[in-house]
Image 1 (tube, rainbow, N blue to C red):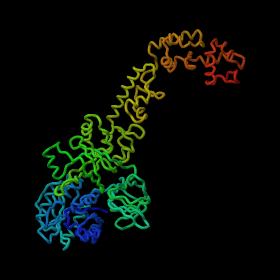
Image 2: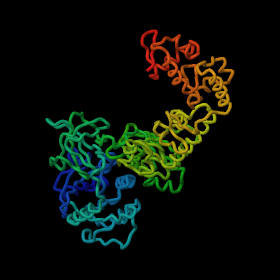
Image 3: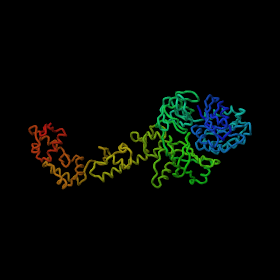
Image 4: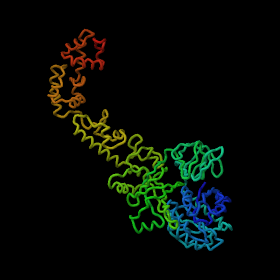
Length: 620
């Protein structure tokens, strides 16, 4: 299926043309039919000469219903632009065209209607010129359908996508309708193929209750697929798809592009502008940084005034069928930050339309398109941060590389929700686990870690290395495993520390330990008391370093012996009658009770001795 929206001034024959093409009544409301203009969105469909099925979203042309028009145009890839021959280009023609420009719609077909009431040539020429100036290209007429031969050549538009075709028709007499059907066939054949695997984002444009079925929502599905039984998120809350329908036909599944009605299980009636989306594949955010592209009259202001152009502080942001009030903060140049009145599911690269509802109705109120550059913007507290961030965003693109350049470190789930495409991503950005990093930032972190670890070694000479948690804090990293992944030779990890040098002791400490070892060599179990250790210059930190380096054996706090003293003690105790008492052990080891008791407890823990009762032990 293909979907095309109508656009153009009120009462220029959009609904009449859709009715003539489809045989269906797009105006659903009694008031619409009574007044002869579209107030709500209307829907109708037909089969083109090629056999392709085409659905129309018929939008209102009156300026009072511009937001409804945007709800219809927003999710669709192509537009049938309608201009009446007897009235020509009108205010809402301009407003709709500027909206299309801001939304980036480039697939367009021009229909000049009411050819039976006036010469279509002036309206055709005027519409062609406006479409070309808006970047939609040279709207060339189909000579067979119009009877008007346009000038040869023209201005290319739409970023090189080709010229816009034009057909002159009359919905009343049927003139040009066959040519219009053929032109619509060519239009939809040129549309890019939607991705059936893309995440779903269905902007709701209608919602109602059906007796016996419950809540039903409708919208245009641009890409991706929905199946009965799927779990989707309705404004972030899980819902289950109970049934599907497209063009009045029940279906078990549907893929974009399509007009679709979704019956939801267990949910109240949502408003227009709410969203059904694939869970985990979108970033729900109320704060975005965007690059603005002025359109219509505003484009001329920017051309004349350059960087001095400023948006009003309060605007309405449109995307899909959503219309959300937003506060505007200029960061630098055309980079602005929008604070939305409610969260929306967005990707990098999405385009918002910015409209000033406070402007006089005689003016064009669509001001700019806004391409989303960041869906998780950082706080900008320090002086100059806003302009620096704007400079970083100037070259941003809607891809993983740009997201990492902006955020530096991201988990896979967050990156997927930003760009919509699941990993794996670039191999040089994969760092550890589910973490991705900007390659330049990751290299910088490695250099910072090395410098930090070396500095720590100088400042803490008695410690074997820098604790991973301390390094994580200094580098400002969110996860310890990131620190571990940064460790490179000649550094190693040992017992939760980054070891930065071979095992060894500072020279003063090494000399003190050697003096202590000499004293213990003569009396291996006569551990010196705290006063003697202090005289030697061995405090708790120095002793700990010597123990870690294997130069001393810690029996308990404040009691140290030579390495292997525990094994030697066990050998001597085996010569005693078994079992033996603490007093017998003390005499055999030629030591004090202060040392004997903790030494025996150490031997118990080491499995060299075993308590028999409260008084006796034996060797194992």
